[in-house]
Image 1 (tube, rainbow, N blue to C red):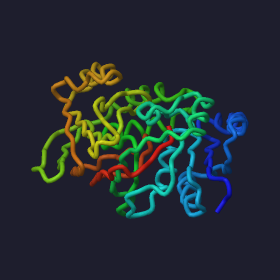
Image 2: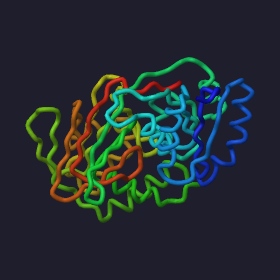
Image 3: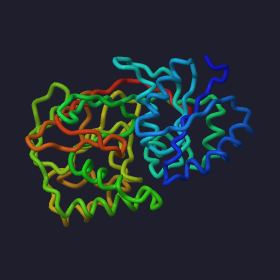
Length: 306
C-alpha cells in the first residue's frame, strides 16, 4: 500500500486539453495545502475505471477524479467492485472539464483552488448510486452512476453533443445538439415499470432516471431529487411536438417544466424501460448502449469529500 492516502486520476484531454495544462497549478495548490498524494494520467476512454480499481486494491483512502463528469463516472465505476453495495474508497472531485452537473448538486466548487481546499478537509457527503443494466452490441452490460441516466431523445442529444468541440463549454454544445437532434427525432412507444407496479404504456420523448438534480450543462431536470433518499426521481417527457418542446426547454433550467401536462415525475427504487424501437442510453452525458434498461438504486453506497 502507498504511504500516500490519496490518488488523483487526471484526465489530461478533458476540456480540450485544459485539464492537462492546469494540472501543474492544481498540483502546486495541493502541495501548499500539505496534502499527501500520488497522481496518474489517463490514456484512453475508461482508463480511469481500471486506475481507480487499482487504487482501491493498493489501499488509497480517497480517489480523486480530475476532469469532467465523465471522468468522475469512470472513477466511480472503479471504486465499486461487481456486486458490492459500498465503494472501496472516498471519491474526490476537481472539476476542470466541460461537465459539472454532478458538482452542482453535491456542492463541489467550480474553482479548483476551493475544490482542493475541500479535499484537504474531513467533510463528506454520503450518496446513493444508480446501477443500470443495458445492452451494447447484443451483450448485457452494467454501469454505476451518481447523477443522471436516461433513454431516448437525451441519449441522442448526448451522442451528438459529445462530438462537439470541447472549447465551447457544457451548455452551448448541448443546446445546439438538442435543436439539431430534434429536427429528425421521432418520439417512441415505451413501456415503463416502476418497482412492482403495473407497466405504464406511453409515447415518450425521453425517460430520465435521476439520482441528482442537474444534467445537460445546468438543466435542473429533477428539481426535487435527493441523492441520499434511497429513491430515483423518474421524469418522463411525453409525446410533445417539436415547437412545444423548444418552448419548454427554458423552463428546465429552473425546474418549472414539471408543471407541463406532458411531463410526469415518479419515484422508485427500480425502473425498467422497454421499447420496440431501441432507445439510446446516456449515463452522466456519456452514451453507453440501448434498451432494454433496468435501473436499481444502491442506498448510501458512496462517500464524496465535499
